[in-house]
Amino acid sequence: MPKDTFFRLPEEKRQRIIDAAGLEFKRVPYGETSINRIIKAADIPRGSFYQYFENKQDLFLYLLSNKYDDIMENLKEILRGAGGDCFLFINALIDRFMDFYRDKGQEQLMVSLTDENLFSLLLRENRENKVCESVERRVSDSLVREMDFSRIAVEDRQEELYLLDILWAVIADNLRTIFRKGKEASLDGEMEKLRGRIRSIEKHYRVPGK
Image (cartoon, rainbow, N blue to C red):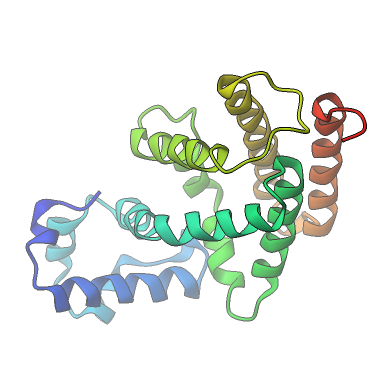
């Protein structure tokens, strides 16, 4: 996360850096983004950048953390539209992901978010990244409180969280496949595989007749 020197900057200068970074991360895939372009657009010396952030990854994760409330509200909106059902929610989330990816002007942002090197920072097994692990747990805990498990074969809150862990792991595994294949990957095909895996899990958890 940013160093104290960043938070001591005048608000206008902080916002200028955030805006410049946001434009750069939307412009090209994460691996092609440039600190030089960010500092030029923000009109700050290169040395100043490293007084504010450890590196480009640090800056990107900070921008993501700033979007936490917006992301959570969007997820809860999707969940409410699915009637609180976790499996309907996942399928609606896939639909929203596909729509977002295809929106004009969003492709490069999504490519940045799905950069393999960056994605490795966000994985729970990367134990050095305690911030992302904590955020992932906060997301699960926040969503599970609004989920309706009356039609799902789980007995308590811990089993509800276990089920969400399984679903997140399946989603992450499919995303890894997309990153590994790169341009050779068929997004439609991989998303259909994901839906199939979710359906297989649902068969074991859905209460018959519900």
